[in-house]
Length: 476
Image (cartoon, rainbow, N blue to C red; front, side, top):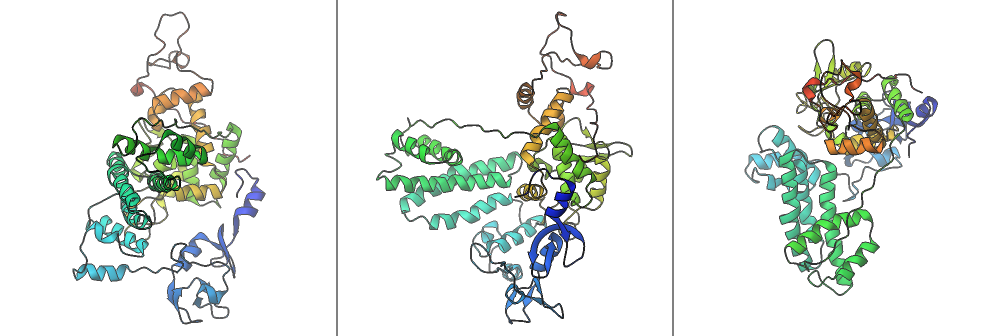
């Protein structure tokens, strides 16, 4: 596991190496028989497929044969790792061309349901997203499609028919409607999709657990609930909560069961010195991929979650020739130098823009899938590999913003005012004496005690300008 904080020497030694394929010094993506390989060369090599000249099999050809440099399979190249799918145990190959042929001949209908059953599901999902990006299929949130594609396989694995029926009803009338409502309000993140699947999995496990205790959902008592709560983790309890509420509301179990309250946990934030250390490394580290530098800077400056960062578009970056603004809320937030130059340079040469479906992508962080932004969980993992602790960095950034800026920070950064008020109290600050108005005529707009003015007046955002933060660009 990478350490969040490291010296420049340690960072170079741990994360960077000369790629054996392209010769550039970049982040290590893995170690192959011919040496370290970067992410770009890794991706290109594993997508190479054909008849291996060594064994004559139709396989992925990431290896290189000594002597003539011909592409060969992992077995012939002597790889210590395989490219086999963790689910089926084989190298899967795409069958998009065959499915397109079937669509053209009318052998399968041009509907979303036609892509939810075929295997392998990844190629079917990829083709479905291409058709949605092209306007041939109506746009549907890909994570809803993902759950609908996964659910039938899960139901088949449930041995008890009554349990399978209950889980199917729960997924159909509780989980999927909640996902659709979330998609209508905004968008579904990978964590929301994962939590939806976890709710179904834990509901299934709970029914099986009840069977081992010779009881059913209808006869489940408070003793059973308490026993299950004691045996499982907080995550498991949170996942089961929705199923129990749904069962009680539908009279599928006793309505007077007591479900323990959810426990809130918070992670410790970085100190201000640690935040500036990481920020300085991102601003002055040319060896770090530029997309990771930009994403990390937005986290450390503006306390934005990655789920919101990946939904930013290039239109959210406003450049009038002098100042650079980032539209996270209202008003737009100024981007100080050298972060502004880094952001503009990145926009001019974004990643994943070479495919036909992404050449006109509006996303600030385009993904590899057609019409989709980068996945926040994937971006979080890459930032973690270079030592950027996202949750701790966000906590440090929002607390520093609240100490330095007026209450308009909630609107400017897209935070709820109750959240920012709570965080400010935790840092020892207060907004109780802050008022709106022309703050250039009095120090920071504070009211002296005893003036009789209200202490709870809210600021008028149109009269307040969010001042740029001063950046320390020297890595410590």
